[in-house]
Image 1 (cartoon, rainbow, N blue to C red):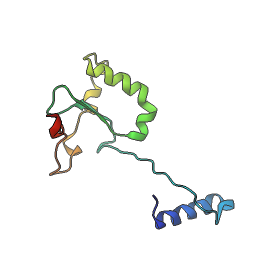
Image 2 (spheres, helix red, strand yellow):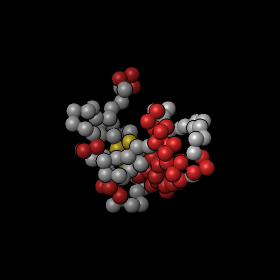
Image 3 (cartoon, rainbow, N blue to C red):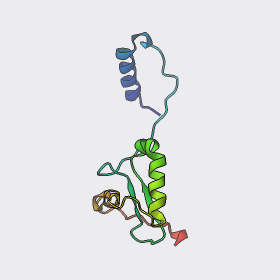
Length: 112
C-alpha cells in the first residue's frame, strides 16, 4: 500500500497533469512489481550447481513484451537447438549478479 508520502506525491502529480482531479480521493492503489538484472539483460542460463536446472528471469516489465520470442529462444536453448549462440554470453549469469556475501542460487534443502 502506498505510504502517506506516496499519496501526497501522487496527488501532486495528478493535480499538475489533471487539474480536474484536484482534491479527488485516491480510492485504490496497486503495486506493479518489477525486477531487473545488474546489466539490464535477461538471465537465461544453466544453474551453476545443477545440470538439469535453468535460471530464467530479469526485466519483468520487458519480459511481457518479449515473452513469445524469449520463450522460443529459451525452449531451443534447453533442448540444445540454440539458433542464436551469440546470445548465450549476453544472458549468462554474471558474477556481479549476486551481492558479495549473498548465497548463490540453490535448491531448497527439502529438494536436495
